[in-house]
Length: 473
Ligand code: ARG
Image (tube, rainbow, N blue to C red):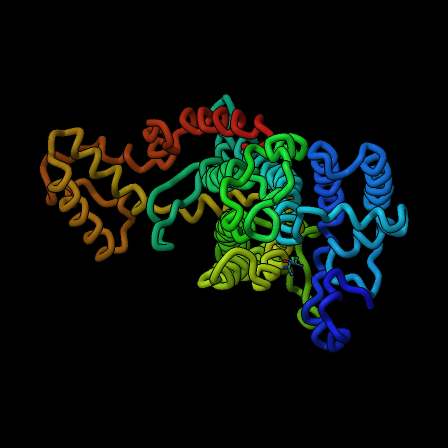
């Protein structure tokens, strides 16, 4: 076996040590980025006078041939390849002979791997952003479908306008539009997408040209390299450049938080599609059955979303723990950076399209949803009724509390409590109190920006659509 560093060694690495040390098993995913980085480096070496134009041409042609193999899915590692950088250099030698050995002049695998990894993430981000965007689109579509029809028709007479209980502490709180609920899961995803876009300036900082740790002794134009590779700026400090994995940690934080958002959405869908709630029915295509209990229909995609969020959080804490306490510049610990990033990306890009499909196809059981509404959910509106008659809110709250207590004691719904009961609480009550007990009126009153009134939700949908008109964020 010939390693890139065999010169000072007497004999080969132990087999188990080799297996532990080699990263080719996972960093093969960086093949294309490694070749693109090398093409830019070869051009920089030519401009610095290190390679002759002829040498540069031959090296570039060899690298282009490898790039074509990568893109065709034909690039393969061999058992002696320690990592992707070794594999590409070995393959270049197979194409152009010993001249391949000039490519690594003035470069280290330390600045090389940091460059490859950043390039990979720059390539990967738009795919993840678009998968998030599609789930956002599914939520907006649902919100729009379930808006009240223009006639103001009620649920049960076709789709649209469904009012459901809004919960706090998982206790019935106030009525909301179902559309509003769908959109409540749109905005966290919008923030996730913006967070990924915000990574760009720190991610697109170029380590190449920083050498092993102290910089490169050749007159390489790092600004030209930056432009050639589509980065924003060259890293300003070579020691920092080869050790900086903040971009990976930031990505993993964004991925973990996306996972947490998906988990929260999932938990609610799981709950709402249980027999006890019965608000949603999942499509067969996005459910599974039981090997034993013939009646079962399980919300597996949502349970997997909830479950995988744990791993996504773990990837972040794992990397932060790896980075913490590293002494200086590159340390082999940093080889541990790639697997969590790949895994987080793979997890989310597998999950998001399934959730989008499951949301698009779920059906809403309007009657179940509406039958979960009760008069107590309008207690706040009742307090507002008193406020409208000049009673300070704090006092109104206490008076309605007494009415609630009467309703609980007598078992009579708040909206059916006799007028004398109300008047015993406060003489200001009159017949008009019964008009309060209409959940649609309650919803309609909340028309300030961000509220659940149909017109506010329509404005919210317009804003949401303008957000997803942007590919990235
Ligand atoms: N496989 C290594 C990694 O992923 C590449 C850098 C190796 N550098 C070194 N000095 N051994 O981090």
